[in-house]
Amino acid sequence: MTTNGYDRALAGDPEVAAILAAELERQRTTVQLIASENFTSPAVLAATASVLTNKYSEGYPGRRYYGGNVHADEVESLACERATTLFGAEHANVQPHSGASANLAAYLALVEPGETILAMRLDQGGHLTHGSPVSITGKTYRFVSYGVTPAADDGSGERIDLDLVRDLAHRERPRLVVAGTTAYSRVIDPRPFREIADEVGALFMFDAAHPAGLIAGGAHPSPVGIADVVTLTTHKTLRGPRGGAILCSGDRARAIDGAVFPGLQGGPLEHVVAAKAVAFSEAARPEFKQYAGQVVRNAAALAAALAAEGFRLVAGGTENHQVLVDLRTFDPELTGKAAQEVLDRAGITCNRNQIPDDPRSPFVTSGLRLGTPAETTAGMGEQEMAVVGSLLARVLRGRDDPTVVEDVREEVRDLCGAFDPYGAWSRSESPA
Ligand code: DSN
Image 1 (tube, rainbow, N blue to C red):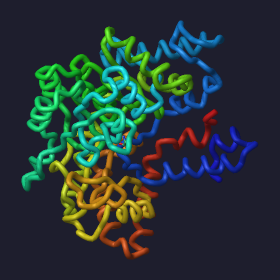
Image 2 (image 1 turned 90 degrees about the horizontal axis):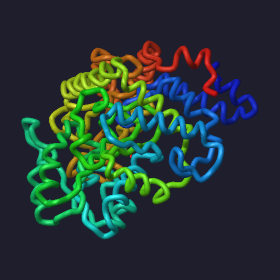
Image 3 (image 1 turned 180 degrees about the vertical axis):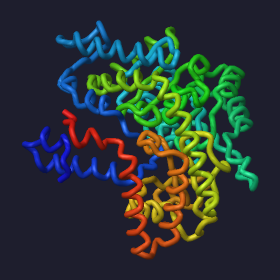
Image 4 (image 1 turned 60 degrees about the vertical axis):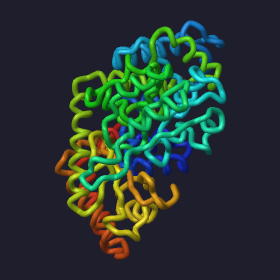
């Protein structure tokens, strides 16, 4: 077992301590390229592991259903204040347990069951909660879906098809138009969505789960003040604890708050709320602006390295924190599933993903989604991204040769040794 805080904090439970220590080791010695993950600061970890996990706080600051909430009130008010300042919003609800919960709460507040919502289809880059038939969202509301434009040889295709969004909006008259994606590598401008929503008298929700940190850091346009409601996650580019939040204008605050609690959730996770407060403060610092810009530059460097290795990039490249790779030009036989598995063995962690109009199922896929938020936090720059791109290609080319996989695993370990997000902390500090 490595020497770290878990040994001491969990001395009475060596089984769990060993698993946590092993996970810490995995995160420190393999490259993290999952676009929706990050390395939180030790301060965020400390707040997440705090005694607020013991507290029941149903309700909102000053209006709780349990006693003893003086400090829960303080921390939640602080988190809301920091969120509204960071994003320039009138109101924040920081209780959603996740991005999915935030989206559900927004729908609950804005749309009646059975009414129409216009959103992006999952297999075009949208999210499960944008109306997938296997999600409660798709069972509760009538979703109409848009996608991306066809692929083009010059890379100008596979952009959100705004003509289709407009046509569908006029034809279907949705109650709500949703912008937001999970597998899309270009900037999403909120203004055309606002215009389309206004043309048909619809409300507009922007799901900023992925770009929240890029927006906070000024690298992407903000939908706050343009969309009626903005949902986000706190753990992706925003680099906070696992969770969600909702931003809106003051006149929608009551509906949003009521939808989160008691509409959808019971007691909030105040330890996570405390960690969100820490993350909002960290994201307001000048260094976070630099971080957000570097995330985008790193993704561009990774994209360039992959293109040079013969991969086709969906949408011709990237303007955000992620790169969606079509594996078929590199090797028509190679599936996303097989690629993800062999990359895992080589210490390169990523997820398979469908590409637009993917002939393979979501479980198999023809694509990989790669992201730079985590390794940018660890300190990697464009030079390291070029190395990672070439290591990735080497593994996939030599995937049937165990020596290639082992060699790359060693190179990855060496690379990560120089960019260890928890080096000092794991040697000296207890997480508890
Ligand atoms: N939002 C998804 C992701 O991007 O990984 C998870 O739901």
